[in-house]
Length: 191
Length: 448
Image (cartoon, rainbow over all chains, first blue to last red; front, side, top):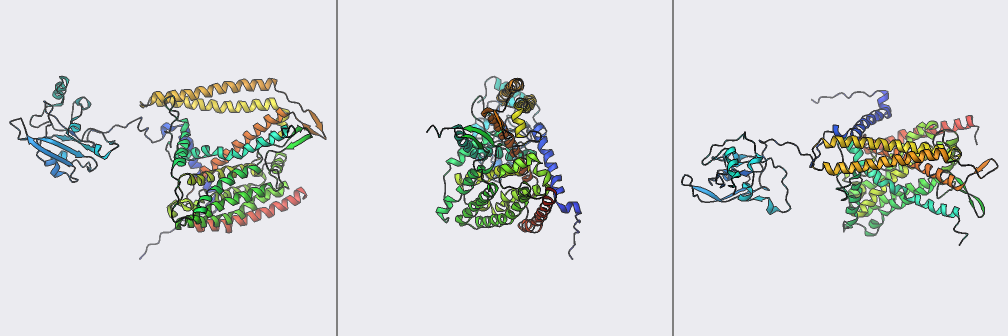
């Protein structure tokens, strides 16, 4: 059985409509004057001149972590590309020079136009080689090909941009702490 | 040839420039609409388009008009294959033609007597000083719906045709109410000439005082007539895409768009003439202004200076806030705002000097008084005319703002609500108002 919702009866003033219009116009006038005279109170961002803080744990553009010699920490195990739901990670493996590690990536590409930024690659990685903590969320380019990040682009980051207290794990074969990495880079070891 | 180039002839020629007044309101109205809407909705609105000089001059968002214009003018003027080509190309011109013709009957300043070779000539503040003035205006502004309907029909599209049908039905309904609600003023003033109506108001009282009901009805009818919210069912985005101009693009769309805004400007000018005293201010009749030109001019300068001073103060306050926000463009913005406030301050100084000078030294005396009518020198008449044009422009801008303000306050009416409001409510109120006005006019004023 249908439930009948009672409509509130309008009184005479409301039926006359004009006073209610004036009431509405008073409300909009208040907002207008506030915006006109105190624009700093408006809940808006002055993007792109003023940018907001993005948290480190926000899933942003990827980066590849490095060993002390500047080579990627990645062991080309294909865990991330297997986990990837949008199949945007393309890896080609080659033999590693490090006797402790079997493989390293010859090619490591992420197609950002395919990526859904789910973070499953970061979860899947056994050696903490891939992270999404660059806080770079405004991805723009003038060609589709420029959205495909290659190994060099993924390795192109500066440890000075990352905090001492990195939230993520540093335990990995050949892995080093951020501070240690920074001293390495200062010596010119940045490949 | 020397007979032709007389001063009255030159003034009459110069008056044709007033045909461009609605066009000058376009950038103001479009910016006001966008940024007014943004402020009402707690946003900032478009303000980023800039002239690439001195690190970017944004001019409070006025530059967006220029970029819009450039974009619309350089787009391909596309004609859909299914459209009726001739009418399709012709229809958007009608609103603009109307926008250029209608200012001809609006009085922008008080009639003045100018000395010519054949003696004193009376020059009125409108190009077409006919007794049927306001009827011409109603007829012309009623024409603009032909542009809507013709374009809608020529587009050969369902949505456009629906929009055109709605526009024409609404026009028919509300023209009646508009005429009847203004008729009260014609009755009281005893003339159709808009100059005569303004003169009557300056002698008695403003139309809004003697005809408050007529004012509200007239304004509401004008909302419908110009197709503005809450009566914008002809566009009706949510139901029929964009209504009558859905098939139009580029400069032909721009013509419709500009025609709509020019129509608002003209409608506002008409409201200010009929109900807000036109070029007349209380206690500042034409003769008062002419005989006390120095103090009056000083007063106007002071008002302008105060306005500019407030603007400069707000700009400086905003500069202080913007500096603290660590914006990447802070240097350029501070430069621009500094430039603007410096301009304001310089203008204020100039106006202050002008005010003092005109208060002390400006003295106008009539050249002759014939039959109790003072004949003033040309420069007195000229300055008063310029001041009165300014008064008209400000009043028109204020009514224009009411158009924008109402649009962002009220939701769109349903079509049947519009029809019942027009025919069942407003028409009846207008008729009753007219009858009462007629009775009062007959009994109190003794008829004419």
